[in-house]
Length: 331
Image (spheres, rainbow, N blue to C red):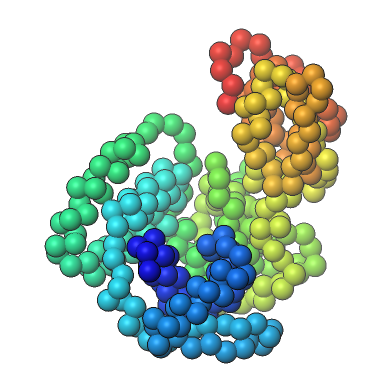
């Protein structure tokens, strides 16, 4: 067996050991980007080299492999780029205003490193330092949200316990914070963080978003709620261009980037539902369905006069007087 195939087999065994529910051939195909025949061959090789691997049929009729013992640990090794990736994630989370998550990953990294033998740690240290330097791990200036870590912890506990949150929330139209009871469903993270949920007792009402920086205080109650089975946080998030949700604004959005900007625009995913059409004059038309006109306007400003809003008319009117021609570069 070649070194590359042995390394791939070890990656497969690591994946199998990490998933207590086991893996199917579909999982192998998706993870390694291979055909069904190759996935079957890989699983046969795995069974031959790891006798403790067993297989059975799950409730959906799929063959599922499991590795119930911990014998794999003797074959595992730690690489400098893996530790550097953790450091990158920690720095990114801290920079983007997620201190609680950054601290949790930092603690996870410390636990991993306690399991690394001294000689191995000494061997990977120089490569790790070089990777950090190459990836630009410096404190970069720039705007970022400020989030209270204690507040994040309270909300995380509410998610785990399906407990109702009581928050003092000050919306833009409120002269002072108002106490609200919320059944929290999830968090949306970006330039700002939004808590997603429904007011307690309004199970048939719309799902709402609450800006984290406008929550003045929060407390966990002993009251619980049932998370609706038909609510999908990812699907909910995709209805917005950014983070803000406004049902009245939801609809088709059409932008046309001029010939000089079309190459830059092709490098963007403006929205998961987007389609792109190359026009005969070299321009690029982008279509998607979303809400959040203000966040769209903030983004479009960067493109100056290189982009034209074809729809909706309200967004077109918002940006029309702010399309500049003196920007030296495109996003």
